Each structure stands twice: as C-alpha cells, then as structure tokens.
Image (cartoon, rainbow, N blue to C red):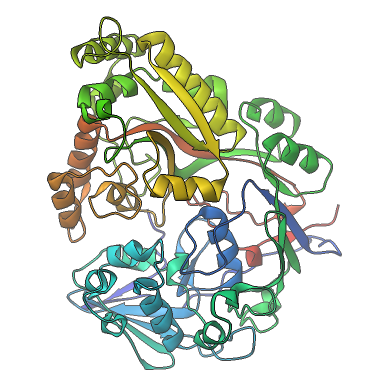
Length: 538
C-alpha cells in the first residue's frame, strides 16, 4: 500500500513536489574518509543502454547512470526524479509531467522533455529491436503497439514536449498504475546527440553521456565497471559515495570469500548458507521478501511432444516438493510458490488453487496417475528431456534436486545443460530448449507485471503459452478499478494449464557490510540508488 504523501485535486490527480531523496546521514554519524562501494554480481549485464537493458544487474547500474521521471524511496514509494510532479486528466488518458529546470547531462547540456520523447520513440522503433519494446506497449501509450508492429512511424507515439520542462503522455486506455511504471530503465531519457555521434559505441566510457548521479569511468567486460560522481547532477551536493565498483564474480563461494576478506561490500549468499551466516554475522546477513518469482518454462512451441499434454505438465509440477527446495536446499527464506504472482505484490490476494491445498504425498500420488493416464512412465513410453539453466551454483542445486525428484517419483530422465547468461538468454529466446529456467522481478509493484508475461504477445513469454481467456482478462484488468477477481481467474487458469511451473518466490539473500548504510531493505523491488548510500567510519 502506497504511503499517503500526495494530494488529490478535483478532476485531476497531481503529484506535488517533494524533497529529493538522497543520502540521509543521521546526525552524529562519522563518515569514512573514502566513500566507495564495491559489490559483486554473478554475470556480465546486458547493456548500459537504458533502452536495451533486460536484466536486473543492468537496471541497477542504469539507475545510477540515468535518472527517469520518478525514482523510488527506501520503501518503494515513488519520489521526484527529473519530474517534479504530474497531473492526470479527468479521464486518466493524458498525463502531464512537469520537469525540473536544473537537471543536466554529464556534458552540461540541459535535460529536456524532448530527451524523454526521443528515448521513448527510440524504445518502440523496430530498428532498435529493444527487448523491452513490449513494456512500452504495456504502458498503453497511444500508438505504441502499432509502431512496434511496424505499422506506424515512431513519431506517432503518444508522447510530446510542448516545451523543455513539460512532457505530455497520451494513453490508449486508463492505466491506474502508469505512474509506477516510469521508474523503469526503458523509460529513462537518452542523449540523441551522443547516440548519433558514436552509434553503437555510445555507451563506452568516454562516450557515454548520462544524467544520473554517476558517470561511467571504466568497463572491462566480464570483470568490472566503475562509476564516479556526476558533478553535473542536479543533486550532486547531497550525494556521498564517490565511486561505485561492480565486480563480475561467477561463483557464489568465491564472492563470499572476497566479502569475508573485505574486498567487496556486498555479495549474494550461496545456497544453503544463510542460517549459518546469519548466526555468524547477524547484522550483515539479510533475507527479506523480494518481488521476484522462480519458475520452469515448458517449451510449448517446439519442445517435446509430451509437453503438449497438460497431464504431463501437471504431473511434473506436482512431483516437485517445493518445501524441500526452499527449506533444505536454498535455506534463505524463500517462499514455496503455487501461483505465478508473489504474495508480496501490492494489492494482490493470493488465490486458492487446487495444487496448493494438497499434501505433498497427495501431489506425488496424483502425479503418477496423471503421467500414466498420459501414456508415459511405468508401463508406458519413457519420458526424457533436457533442462536448461544459466550457470550458477544455486540454479544447479535446484536443477539437480528437481531432476532427482522426477526420476525417483516418476521415472523421468532429465539431462541438465547450463550456459553463460547472455548465451542462455539468446538460446531461451530462440526457443532452443525443452524446459528452461525462468525468473522475473517485477518492473513495478502490481500483479500485472507478472501475469502479463504469460499473455500471447508478451516478449518474455518463453513458454509460448497462448490462452484467449488469459489475454482477455489481462486486457480488462488494465482499466479495471478492481482487477483482483480478474487476476484470480488468470492464476487459476495457469494452475490448471501449467505452461510454467512456479517453484518459489524470492527473498533477498545478501551479505552487506555494516559500513554501508542506506540500503532499501524494505523495498520489495530492491531498486537501490547509490546516491542514497554512504559509508561510515569503522
């Protein structure tokens, strides 16, 4: 539930100017002389280009390098970014944003409403082929769908700049959560002049012009990237951290070793080690709910013929003991999932689905019956397939346990295949898999950010699931004042059809040095901004 920090005016909702959220250093705190933050990630991120980013690692960096219309505070509420406020028309089809007049790009050029128009038009341009073009369509921006389909020119997009500090957005239908969607990287502004000068090389250090609190100083692919304070940032005087370094360390155990040695300030906790680490480091080990899900995709387009039988999909879903996976394997406070949408999602009530009400023993028995009815398993055809996941110890452990359960309970043979992150994304996106790992972290805090993934036209519908009723329900939900009944029906269809197998809903499992303060632990999206952090003296 959003904090009541805005006021409602007659016939229009206006988000009034609020104080900027920057590093809030309490009185009496002694800051460290060197204001640095070094953190570890598992894989190389997808891009520095906000319109091409498609992963959480890249989005974390983008929020430092670029600033959109709105940011989030430590609780996940929206607060001013480049935009000071906005008004919505009485029919909620037109949003008018008022931009601050002191925002600058790192080269000193003023940030204008035209920079947002350019970026948003760029995001839907078929030539760019943004992996998040569908997100702009999801925002219901006028003509967005037609432009993405190549039926209209990008200039027809329902966004305009009457002057440098006014951005007007026209929607094709009212969207109650539109204002939440503009904290996403795809909607960040882009510097047209730098892109035109450098082309695809515009994101390299020295070429990259950005408007966030930091600038890109160094990038060694698959090793590290370094960003430093942007002296041109409008709120630079309230930024504390001088440099932020991202290290790519592809092994969780090595990441923990380097955290213990003080070489990194933050790293993910290896699977199964949270209880011991929380006991050893009670103030530095964290496990809190996060707005993400973990699931297995069936390839319904070109995968094994057996996957076309819903009884096979149901059997494989029922045979997985999620309690074992989260309590014995991961041990980091994750939540067993029987619905696609996490319970932590704002305004979402988890619906009742049959599989969740059963005991695991009942699920196992029913799984055997279903597989036999489908003509596979004991007394039928052998069932075998390949499971694809991106290289990571925790993903490997989940894969091994799942395949053991399928083998022991159903006699199913599964071959495991792992790939480096970018290769994995390409392979999965090209449908070159039987079953593949999936995970999604909400782009905004509303159930549609999850359920829209399984609509027919979704760019991240890797299962290639298509259900006309789901499409209809999700379309209706966009303009509904009470979408919960619609979401409940969608979840029940997904539980019956099982195009994907929900495994668990995330918790944030990380080791964070107590020298780093200001981390937004209470933000379930875990959208963090280095400008809000600071290092205290030992």
